[in-house]
Amino acid sequence: MTAPDILITAAGRGSRLTGVAPMIPKTLMPICTGRSGWPESALARLARQFSDSGAARIWVAVNAHPWFTALPEGGGLRTFRSRPLGEWAAVADCLSVRASDGPLVVVSGDNAFSDADIERFVDALTSDPAGCRVACADVESTSGLTKLELDGGHVVRLHEKPPEGGAGVAKAGLYYFSADALDWAAGWAPRLDRFGEQSMTEMLRALLRNEFELLGHRLSEGFHDIGTPDGLARAIQHLAATSESESFETESFETASRGSRSVAVTSSLRGSEVDHRSLQRKGDPSVNQVAELLASRKILSAVEAAIDAGVLTQIATGPVPTQVLAARLDLDPGPLEALLRVLLWNDLLVRDNGDWRLAPPYDGLLGEHPGKTMLPLLRIESWAHGSHVNGRGIRAALGGEQRPTEIPDDEVGDLAAAMLVGSRSSAPYLARLPELRACRSLADIAGGSGGYALTLTRIHPELSVVVYDRPAMLRHAEKFVAESSSDGRILFVPWNLHTDDVPEHDSALVSHVLHLLPRDQRVELLRRVAAGLPRRGLLLVHDFVYDDPRPGSALAASAVDWLATGAGFALTSDELRAELGEAGFEVDRTTSLPLAGTTLAIARRT
Image (cartoon, rainbow, N blue to C red):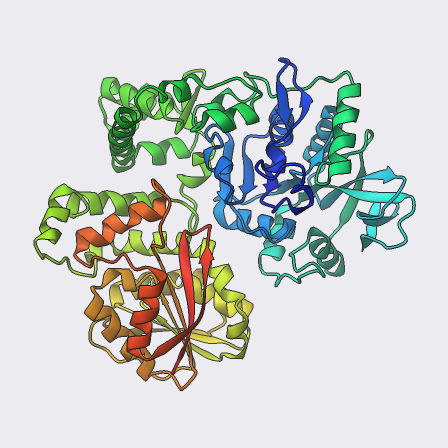
C-alpha cells in the first residue's frame, strides 16, 4: 500500500490562544528552529514530516483567516475552507472535496510530534492498512485530554476530558481511517458534543459501537498540544531542547511553493525563505494583475485543448511518453510536447523518466472516476466559453439579448455528470437540516443529476423525492440513481421549467435554478412552487448569493456566467429575501456553504 492522503485540521477558532496570538492562526505560529536556521510553524512542520514519509497528497482544512487564503498550493498540497465545528467536521468537509476514495490520515494542526514518531506511524499503517488507528501516549495528567482504555492494543473506551484527570493513556490528535470506515462515516449523522462541535471522540465511539477495529498506536516520544499558552510554551521549550532542529526544507516541498500567493504567509509556512515570484509581484501590482488574468485564460485554453484531444484522459490511464501518446491520438509529436510542457509548468502534469502522468491533486480530479471527475465540468465550461461566456456574448447581453435557459441536448450528459460531482460538496449539508426531519414528500425542482435526491433519501428514510426536469436530463438522472441502488423512493417526472405547475408536496428544493432566470421568471417560478406547498411548507433555496464576494474568488467570477446568459443574476441576501417574499415565502434563516461557495435559504410558505 502507498501512503494515504493526509488531512491537517487547521480550521479552529483558536479561542484558547487569543491572548497570545490575536492576529496569527495558531498553526502558522513558529514553534521551533528549522534546519535552515529559520523558524518553523506547526503547520509547516506537519506538512514536511508527512511529505518526508511519502505522502503524495496533503489536504489542509482552514478557516476564513486572510493568511490562509495565501497558503501555497501545488504539488501535493491543497487547502480548503472548513467549518470551525470540531475535528470531525473538517474530516466530513474533506471527504466532500477530495475526488479520490481510499484511506485517510487525520492530524490536528494544534499538535507537534517528533519526526521519528510520524515515520513509524506511517510505516505501521502502510504495512497493515486494515482497521483504524489512534495515536496515543502516556501522560501524567489526562485532564483536558481524551483518555483511552486499551485492551491488547485495541481501543475499547474513550473518556473525553475526564474531570478526575490522573495519569493514563491519551489520544494524541493523530488518526488513520480505512476506506470502509470512511464510507460508513459518510452516512453517519454526527452527534454534537457538549461543546457544540462534531468531535473526533464522538466519531471514534460511533466506530466502536459499529464494530470497527480501532487500534491504539503508542508514540515513543509523546506529543505537544500548542492550542493553549502553557502547551505552546512547553512545546517550544521541548523542541528547543532536542537535537532535531527540524525545518521546512526548501527541497522537501519545492512543488508546493510554486503556487504561493503571499510573501507573508509563505514566509510563515517555509521559515523566511521567500518565493521569488511573490517578490516579482511586488514591482507593479496593476501590471502583474492584468498579466495574471491573461495568463489564466491562456492556461485554461491549454487545458481545454488537452481535454478535447483526449490527452488528459489517456494520461489518466497510466504514465505515457510523448511519442506513444501522439501515436494513440494521431497528434503531431512536436506541438504535443510543447502542450505537455505548458501543463507541466503549471503543475497539472509531472514527468518521470520521460513518462507523463497527472500531478496531485489532478490525478484524482481529472481521471475517469464516475461521480468524482471534474472532466465533465471542464467540458461544459469549454462549451460555454465557445458559445456565449465570452466578450461577444456579454456584449450581446448588455444589448438585451437573452440566451435559452436550457443547454443543448448533446451537452446534457456532461452537465448531469458535473452536477452529480457538485452535489457531493453541498448535499450533505442540506440533508442534515433539522427542518427536513418532519418532511415526507419533497419536490426537487429541475433536480438535474438526482445527486441531492440520493443524499436526502439516504439520510431521511421516511422521505420520498420527486425529481422534476426535462426528459433529456432525467435519462441521465435515472441512470445515476439506478447505479446507486435506490430503494424506489426517488421518482422522475418530465417537467418544463417555464410553464408546468408543481404538484403538491410538503417541501421543495430549488438548487442552482434561480441563477438561470431573469427576475420576473424567478418570481413566477417561485409562485408555482408555493402553489404546490401547504401553509408553512418548507422551501430550500440553494444558489449563489453575492454579499460582497472576495475579489478573485470563484464566487465573484461565477456572476459572469449569468451575465452572459442575459439573466443578470447577482442577488444579495436581502434581494433574495425580497423575491421570496414577493412569491409568498418568509425566510427563516440563511446559511453559507463555504466549500461550495453558495448560500442556503430556509423559507416557509406564508
